Image (tube, rainbow, N blue to C red; front, side, top):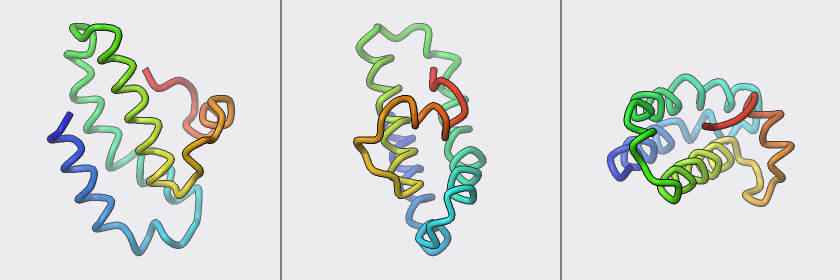
Length: 89
């Protein structure tokens, strides 16, 4: 998780200019193309985690998506599901 967070921070930093344009569709597409593959690679070991670790990973994906897309952190799960395109895990 720490390595993914380090990569995520680097990508977020490099794309600051694009992300600050506040174009939601662009930010969502950038997140799906550049950030989600990091989590999909780790999904192969996801079933070995206990329930607490699974929940932490799910929350981390949600928070990173909201931060990346300049959305409020306290956005409801229903709205998150509509923007993200379904469930996280």
